[in-house]
Image (tube, rainbow, N blue to C red; front, side, top):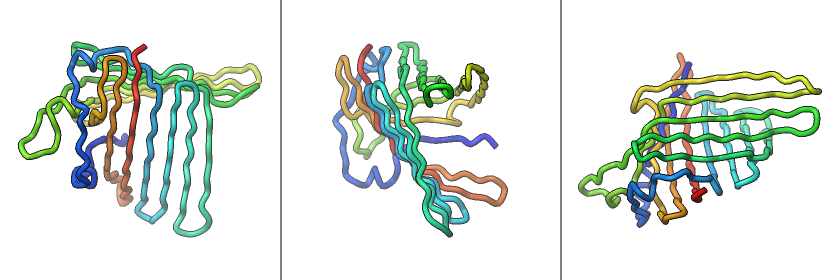
Length: 217
């Protein structure tokens, strides 16, 4: 089953009284950005009560992924993985398209995995709605139309390449970011999301938070 992820502003975020002052312009958005920092936290609760809490933190040169699995019965299990960030760029085009490409090297010595993720789609500002707390050009919608992954695993000099890809209709997979600060050479954005997945009789709830700081290349 292809799971669709929607990043959206949660009810808790809207009612917390947090008002951003980071409105921007199309001219400031359009750029080839380097991701200087990125943090994402996720929480998944399965229908049987099992929980997965994940934290992914990027700097310009390194990434750390930590997952805590808490079953309904038995002790919690924590796993962690670190990697070297070869590149992490978000290109936003004037014509309304964007591409986010991240390449990370995991492992060392005779056993490595070089993973490249690419997301692309269209983007636009979300219009101001009467009665909301947001200013004009303070929220940006990124439609995800395509995702691709290429991973090259090398072990003892032998390399194996695997590829995956998905496509989405407009509105099927989206990211909605709130602009926290916008400068000519720096852009700060945040997003919160919640989604419910159903697969036959299994239901799981997924929530996430992401903050990203972009610097002009």
